[in-house]
Length: 229
Length: 229
Image (tube, rainbow over all chains, first blue to last red; front, side, top):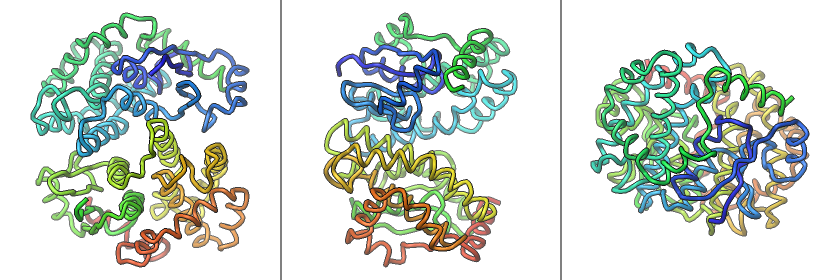
């Protein structure tokens, strides 16, 4: 895939999973960050936003809206959607579970940090045992689906990584250690994905945005409100 | 695909889109409807439920959870996911927009009917213009993506159909006519999908469950509460 543009606000939000997937698929991308309402209105009028919403991925003539549609588009381009129809279904099953689990990560900068982490802890208790069992059931550690990397691994690693960041920023790194203690398979998957050259390059690049804690989070919320005002 | 089993409650809920997709893909399926908490506990203990939730599609040895993962699995099996990667992304874009729009249909039997329809009207105003534009942009009516039937068409038809049922049951058929008046392309797509032989056969079969209005809705809510008690 030729270089693409990811249109969004200046922050992680609903684009962060897309960035991980683009990076994992070794697709070169540029973040186009909205700063003003006028820029957003112009983008709406361009006809490139199917739902008058961002994120939107501009891939040549094809402009794709909806964050998970972008994730799946990047996964197909990177051949990270499994090798059989059953594996593709398993990838979808994990991605949809992550969507159910990940709300507190997206809402973190918009609410009280301790309250967001309380909800995150509930998500961990509800979903992380399911993900841990899925890795065990798959029988090819560290992978969650099949015998090689898929989008399921990439977004599970992102979820673990964001969880560590949220709990470390709000409480202490020990809180993250304690929360992840019962899930050694998820931690091994997280380590594996973080060791991939393309993910290391992504995290060292200007496409890597910091976790929205403190002033970073307040600036991001202000950016969103200004653009949508 | 060999005949499959769809495990869920005795009603539409989060399985109805899967049923339309299975039917559109000409996959023979049986509804396995939970009646008691004991049946649900036994299913959980079987290890077949990735998230301890239904719906779950049992396709031989492969048991898929998450309603939209089931939809996508059926779409792949029926070759209803577009003919190129860009078309697959467009299908995902429509499916994810439908998920954003369809909440009031799922919650209808669990809340006041007029209030549910109020939310549904908001969804119509927000999303139906986007779907109408998507069909227009695609340039191959009645289809929303590409030049032949895809999962996007099937679930848009389901959304239009459920919308008509909800507004007709709660107010009158004229309310549905008025709501859909501004969207001739969506109505043409709906008519096309309803005319497909496999959809006609589905709607005439015992796999077709009635819209959850009145006593049907109350029985369904009681069934869900009994099973999850």
